[in-house]
Every structure is written in structure tokens, then in C-alpha cells.
Image (tube, rainbow over all chains, first blue to last red):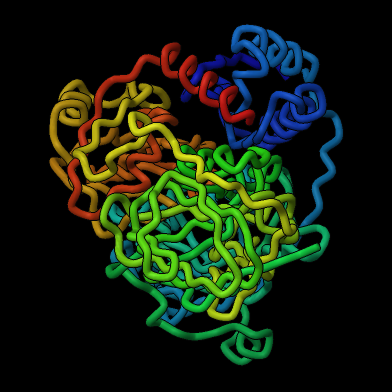
Length: 239
Length: 309
């Protein structure tokens, strides 16, 4: 894959690699490969590497290596990962209970002329691709949300959202693996655990994994261990 | 030989911390670690500890401990009116504590968080490579479940020699956390996409620390800094990044921050200025000034070498 990129410092010990390519499944796999290569080749100087759709953030130790030498070595890593040939795309299916009790923003789509049933139909038809993992442990950013379901984030994030909240922001969808603050539109809840730090793997997906959602009934949701507590959605109060 | 001290009252939020988790942020696992790493590092430095051993971060005070075995301790950071058997302790200093004595923290007088270290560090099992406590991730802490310290919790350490004289940090290095804050900002990320007016507002006006200020981030209130409207793809967030959501109220992201986010960022607060923010209380005023990357990087490297990171 032909890559155009820039490397710029964003803080004393952080560099951001930006790829000019449009985000795509192929770019995600390439970025994943570059991140792995940097981890292997430059591990002594690196604290964290965060790959995302079109960027890689690298936290490094500038007191162990001068920034210009480090950047030279980064360029070598990037140039060596020209293509990622192996696109091993496993498919995960996740159960979701779509209802205003667990997804209060699902009713906002009425403003755009979509009933709850139509939102469910559209959201469960698409197969999504994980393009980035982050924000919280196991939180996967998935694309491509169908045009009618796209909504901007809330202008002020909610201070609390329950674990399992299924969310939409613009062209991305996601599930919150733990209770968290968040600004996305919540349309339902997935009762399956998505971050299990004491098991291996801790996280069920990686960049490039394909994901489908399956609509389940209230009964099935409660059977699997889902919880219904609308008071967990908080706009105000202490963080 | 192992000794311990016992938590009688844990206070509002007392957390076991070391420098945090590294090499896991691509899974979305936060770095964590002491939000005032200057005070944390001094506590270990004064005791002659390695740079990364477990220390207790005590936020807002009202905590009490019983010393069950004699030990050499150090307190640094915010002044929470610490006493040993009712006698005031000197902050930014080591002190010996004997069996049966009571160590108490009252309310914050200067800053918000005190660091309590023991010679050799507290003995706590690692959880994903670190003891750092992150409640929202269920990681770290005394019981590897992310929970803050509870009454009855015993903090173990190796028994060790006591010093005859306390060791204190020189007066001129002690920060006054109650002063108005001036934070240097390295302009980066989406800085170029902000309007001239927005940048001018950010760098010339005064902001206030809001009630929503914690280890994840400090939300400030003040004149709206209008962010660029073009949506950006979520990307990795560096420590100290200043995120501007659509309401224009800056959020400075700290140790327990999310690893990735999609709000525009105007830059990053200098690492050496972050402890001041992390010790600030709601209502304190904050101004941002333009920082010089190379100079700040040099100072940071000197600091890292001094403490032996």
C-alpha cells in the first residue's frame, strides 16, 4: 500500500504519525502492522503505541533517545511495512436489546422520521469493521454506520452511561464495555462482557475484525444478565 | 521480614499508585499512575527508593492509619494537615513512625492530594504489570480489582532500618498549589484548525476549575473556545491533551484519561505543569500560555534523569 504520512511532536514525549490516505479496512490493517513493528523494533524507547484509523500516537522516552534519531528509526519501520497481505477477518455476532429503557437516544431518530423498529432493522443489517480500539478497555470503533442512522455526538458528554451501552456517533458505532462518561447516542445494550482483564484474550476483537449485531428480546436480554436501570444515564452531578 | 500499617479510615479517595500501565494502551487500557508525579517522585527519592515503587495517593484527606511495625515514611504533595499521634508532620519530608502510632490526614490546606511512601515501597501484587488503581477498569489496587483503599486494609512493606534524622526537601522546591495556575501549552494536534479568535480566547482569557475535576480530566469553565466544526477521526490522546468539545469548555486530560477520542485538541499542557493542575481545587483560576516544545522537552528530560525514570 502506498503511504503518504507526516510525523509531528504533539507533546514532550509523544509523536503523532498521520497518514494522508482515506480511512479503509486496508489502511487499518497496515497501521496495525506498523504499530506491531514499532513495538518490536523500538520497544526500549517506547511506552505506548496507539494505532487508530489514520494515525499512530507514540509515547516514547526522549531522555533515552534524541527525537531526531527516534523519528529516523520510525520512518524505517513504516517503510518496511509496505503492504499487509493477510486479511484474516473473523466475524463476531453480538446480542443487543434495543429499547428506550437501555437506549434513551433511540427515540431521537423520530425527528428524522425513523421508528424504533426501523433503527433496529438498519443497525442489525450492516456488517461493521473494527477500525480502532481505545477510549476505554476493549472499546472498538466500528464503521460504516448507514447514512440514516448517523447523528453527531451530544454537545456535552453524559457524565455516566451503563456498561454495554450500544452507541452511534456520525459514521461509527460501538459498545461501551464498562460504565463510563460518553457523548455518543445510545440506542440499546449488549449484555455480553467485552473486557475481561483476568482472561485471555482480554479483548475479543482487534483492528480489522468484522462485527454484526443481533436484536434480542427483553427476556433474552435479562436471561443473559442484562440490566435495566434508566437512572444510570446521568447528565449532571459529580464525575 | 514483613511489617504493615492498617487503614483505620481510608478517607474520600486513597489509591495505590506506581507509574502505571505501559504497552497496553492499544487495547484501550489507560496509563494511570500518580497525577502529581513530581510529589510521587520526591516521596520515593527522599526515602532512597527505586523510582517506580507503590505509594499511596490520598485525595482530600480524612484518612487514618495505625502503624503496626516501625517504619520510615515520607509525605509529599498537597498539605492535608498530616499528624503523627496528634503532632504535626512536616510535609515534603521523611519521618520515622513507631508501632502503635496513629497517622492522620485532616483536610486540604494546600493542594488536594498527599503522597505517602514507605522505605522500599508498599508490597502489592501487580495487575497487568502495575499496581495503579483504576476503578472504571477494575484494575490494580490492593486486591487487583480497581477499588480504592478500604477500612481494615493492611499495607505491607519489608522491615527496614529507621533513620536518625528526617530528610527534607529544600524549601525553594516546594510548590504552592493554591496560587493561580499558569499552564504552558505545546500547540499541536488540531491547533491549526482552530480559528484565530478561538486561539486568542484560549491563550488570553481566564478559566476556572469546575466541579468535574478528577484523575481522568479537569473540566474548566470560561469563555467558549469555539472548536473547528469539521468532524475528526478518533485518535490517540497524549497525557495533558486539551480537548475542546462543541460547548467550547476545555477539558485537560490526565492519567486515567481515555486512550482515544474524537474531540478536537488545541495542544498539550507541559508535563512539568500538570502536577499543579492535578492539585487544583474547583474554583481555582487557570490561564494558558504558549509553551516551547524543545525547552520543555529538555526540562522534562532533566527531571526524568534526576529521578532516575
